[in-house]
Structure formats: structure tokens, C-alpha cells
Length: 160
Image 1 (cartoon, rainbow, N blue to C red):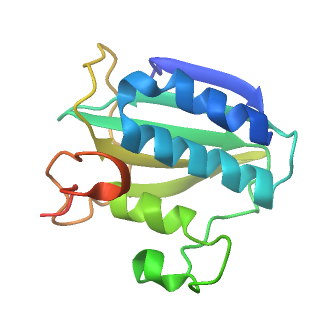
Image 2: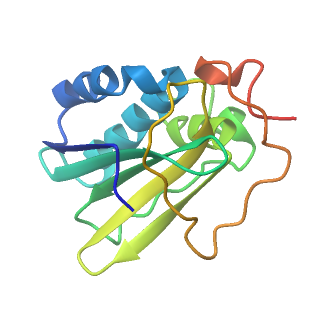
């Protein structure tokens, strides 16, 4: 599977906006998920670690986004389990994975020796890319998330 976009960078707050700019043609939802995943690397793995952001078109009109970092042990945790409401109202953080969970058709983590990739799949109206990739085994689709996402925060979103 060859990504249509592969960005190699050091995870710093300044690079997050660069990732969003580089992924502008994929739409707001892809930009938001990418920036949340890179921000999670900064917060939970460390500022300045090497990160690779990959994006490509899946069969069926999905866009797959993957963010790879060098710490296979720092796994993402969805706070509260009930979406963005799971984070305390006064908390300054804790909503990134809830947003990703709300926007993505499905998401998960692939662990390898010396690295991990947090990935998600989204429907988007972005321009099609010629590259496709097969679904990895063991990643069931979340039921009811088949409509294309309309934009940031999932308004008229991927939920049926």
C-alpha cells in the first residue's frame, strides 16, 4: 500500500498547522483528525519525536490516514467512551480521540517493533486519488457510518 501523501516531520506544535495545510485538499475532517493525532504524539510521546503522516484513498471512497510514531507502548485511549462529552467540561484536553471517533468510519492502532501507527478511515468529498489499499485484517467497520462527512465536527456527518 503506497500512500498518496507521506509527510515526515518532527512532532512539534508548529508542524501541526503545516500538516493541516499539506492535507487541505483532503477536506476538513482529514485535516482535523491528522492534527489531533499529531498533537497526541506531542502530548503523550514527546515533542520533537519523528512522525510520519500518510494519507491515501481506500476502495469505496474512503480516505485512510495513518500517523506513525516511535513508541509502540503509548496507546491512545478514548476518554469516557461517550464521545466528546466524556471529557470534563472544564478540561483543556481529552476530546481529540472523541472527535476522531465521531468523524471516522473506523480507527485503530497497528503496533510493530519500535513503532505504532494510529489510523482512521473517513468518507470525504476530496478529489479522488489513484492509489488504493486493502483493509488490514481485524479492523471491523463501525456500523451506521456510511454517509460522507460534510465537514468539521461531523455536522451532517458520517453517522446514519
